[in-house]
Amino acid sequence: MRAFYVGSLFRSVFASLFLAAACIGGNAQDMFDTKAKQAFLVDADTGTILYAKDPDTPFPPASLAKLMTMEVVFNAIRKGQLSLDDEFYVSENAWRTGGAPSRTSTMFAALGSSIRLEDLIQGVIVQSANDGCIIIAEGMAGSEENFAQLMNERARELGLTKSVFKNSTGLPAEGQVVTARELAKLANHMWREYPEFYKYYSQPDFTWNKITQRNRNPLLGMNIGADGLKTGFTEESGYAIVGSVNRDGRRTFVALSGLESDKLRAEEARRILDWGMRAFQKITIFDAGEAVGEAKVYGGEKSGVALRGDAGPLSIFVPTFNRDRLIARIVYDGPIIAPVEEGRRIGSLKVWIGDTLSQETPLFAAESVGVGQLHQRFFDAVEELAIGWLR
Image (tube, rainbow, N blue to C red):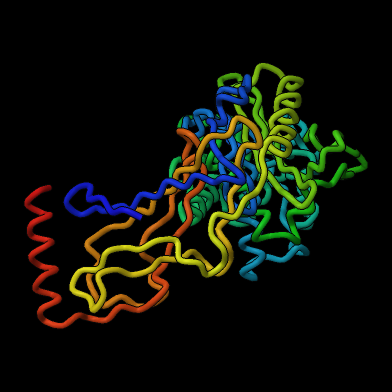
């Protein structure tokens, strides 16, 4: 690996890997296109970005906001702040704004009644119930405004920096936006963190108040391994969906928005998920524990420190056809000043397939590097001074 200096406090090590047995490359957008205005497709295991189209452009979430609502609820249950047997009161506001009089998606909760949290969860997930969302929001935080604050605080904790929530339902509200990338990230998080609750997203139907409603996710009936998650629609941004497929030992998440009809939404979601499963193959870039590269150390007993990933191998999904090459770049802030402890986070490995940044993996020091002797520190200082002048 060859070192380059970029900027006054930034260094990067570039590695161009040409794989004889599995030459990689091509740009995903050169092989696939979708009618969705925003799209993001990611492999759940490796984090490989399989497709991206304007993934960071904000759009109104509609009912996709309910994914964040449920994350707040699941997190509260995990912390012991709620239980599935807790009962929530149906206020007039919840009944009128999200219930039968609203003529929106509803579980037909009866005014003045009390409902178990588990039933409300199923109403929200399976029936996309707006009354269920408001009932939960008022029960947990006193009002939808307060609950929206909880949603935003939790979103920031999860690294969702662009999404903004104004209510628990996703009903139109000025300034309420999400992005395709962050929705897929949220979906992946919920699958990993709450397997005991994630099962509700594949539940085919739910009966409440003697009314049975089927799950609104069209992917569940397609026999493609789908087990989630949510659909949405607004006049402003069109039809949207967050979907998940688990097939042949692989799981992918997709987020689409900006489609013109519910039929097209279902077709495009199925098409991109099928393509993601068929058009890529998994390769291992580095074995578990294998040194990925080296970062330069200033003032150390050694001039560099070996870097590795986490405990497992570093793998990525690459296009099966239209192969070219894989470009990997190690990026870290420098200079790294000794001493360096083994296991310290140093930087990240960024992998491009063609022009697409497809994966970013944290890198850690594979060894400890102590402080060097006086003459070693002197020469490092001279080198750093010279390089700094050249910059």
